[in-house]
Image 1 (cartoon, rainbow, N blue to C red):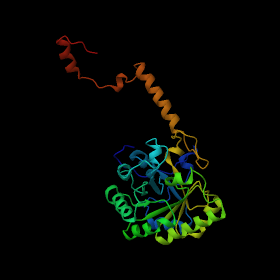
Image 2: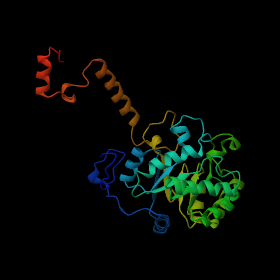
Image 3: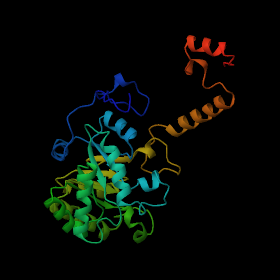
Image 4: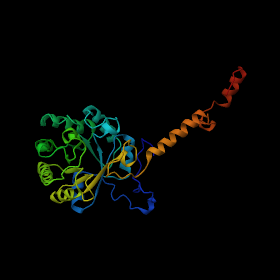
Length: 311
């Protein structure tokens, strides 16, 4: 696979080492859309979501047949090394979303609206969401928060921009929450999150991410709603699941959260390859003669007649 040539989608691959031939083929090669995701909810077909931040990674996700690629503001931590998601800017997010857009043919592209891009007022939120769609090619945006975001959701829907909500553990609220803690553990907190979910649906959200909440609560909200729920640390009863690509591929540098399943150890493969490359360079075994370009015989003969030392 080259980075500039698109090939047909392959059969679904396993993260457990099972032969491709033993697995079901990708069920559909048709473009994923907001209406098709709502249909999957009705048909009880699980929705697969992965965050990806660059062209090459997004190509692999798309060719594997996943439904949604989310360019999450988690890239502030994963790609830039910040301690939380708050530092990433609109301009930086737009840059990453543009790269991912060029990679996708099937998956729906959702852009995370970064902290500060919609909290000040609804008008600024709409302006920034329009930029994601118009300048970067996003097909939807994601915002964090419940009842307090409903007016913005309505404004975005009026502007023909699909909106994914996000409640529970909302990383942009890390300071208010006092860290990354499971939410909805008390009756009052549980009922508030259920109310938030219903309000977001009524305001026009086409889907809601449930992060860091008890499985039982996620199941209740999923049954409450007509729109799909996407879980991350919310148990198996949601309509879909999302993981950060770097977490599932063991390419992050911290202990995984409880809900992260590691499907491959790409970091070890890369580290081993780099160590081997360093050895080959230092031992002068790379590049070999076969990996080198050469002058033509005629040119070498002319140089030899001039007394040049060749090789």
